[in-house]
Length: 181
Length: 213
Image (cartoon, rainbow over all chains, first blue to last red; front, side, top):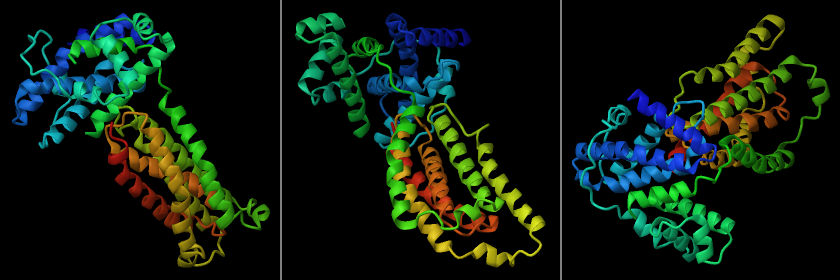
C-alpha cells in the first residue's frame, strides 16, 4: 500500500515537471482505486454500485483542475483521497443520500481488485454536447479519435496553441457544468 | 465518454499550468482594495490629529492587531485551500492578534493609572461607527477573497469562508483604525472583534455556496 502511494507521488512529480506519459500512467493507476471506493460509497448509500463511473470521471476532472493545490513536497495519496472523498460525498448527496465517507475507504482499497462491470458514464458525455463547437471538436478528436494535439491542430487548421487553449477551456467548462448540476 | 478516453484527454492537457492560489488571492484582493479605500476616503477619512496619535502606543497597537489578524487569516485560508488540510497546527496563528490585545489591555492598566473607568473606555464614542464601517469596507474584500480562494480546493468551505471573512475584516479594520479616535485596547477588543465575527459569519454562510468545487 505504502509502495503504491510512493509510486503515485513520484509519478505526479514527474507529471508536474512536464512528463505527460507519467501523468497518464498515474491517472490510470488511481482509477481502479477511485472506482472501488465509489462503488463502496454507492452500496452503502443503497444505490446500485454499477453507477460508479460518473463519480470516477467527476473525481478525475477535479483532480486535473485542482492539481496546482498539491504540494510537491507532500505525499500524493492524502491529497487525492481528500479530493475524491469530497466529490463522492457530493455525488451521493446529489442522489439524495447523506453518507459518511471515510478517507480510509480509499486508502484500504486493494489494488488487485478486478475491474467490475459498470454502467457507462453519461454525465460528461451529456455536458460535452453543450460545449461551444470548437471546444467539443477538439475534445472529441483527442478523446474519441485519440489524435494528438499536433494532429488535431492539422485536422481543424488551428495552431497547436489554439488547440491547447480550446482543450483546457473545454475541460474547465465541463468541470463547471458538472458542479452546477 | 469512456474513462480511458477522459484520462487520455486530461493527460493531453498536462502542459497547462494554473497559477498558485496565493497569487490569485493576492490579485483579487488588490483589485478590490480600491473599492474599500474609496469607501474609507469618502465616508471616513484619516482622523485629523493623526500626527499626535502616532505617538500614542495604543494607537499603533490597533494596527499591529488588525494586521496580525489579516496576515494570520490569509496564511490559514491559503493553507485551507488545499483539500487535505485541517486547522491543526494552524489555528494558533489567530492567537497572535488576541495575544496582542491582551498585552495591550494589561499595558493600559499598568501604564495609565489615571485611565477613565473601564466601561467608558470600552464604550468609547465610535462603537456604532466601528460596527458598521468595518463590515462595509470588508464586504468588497470578502467577495474578492472568496473568488480568489475558489481557485483552490477547500474541502471545508464554511471554515475557509469564515477565514476569508476574518482576513477581509482585518484589512478593513486596518483602514478603520486610522479614522477612529478610540484607541483603548478595551474598545478594540470589544467592537473590532464583534465586527470581525460578523464578517466571518457572512463568509461562513457564503463559503459552502461559493467555494464548492
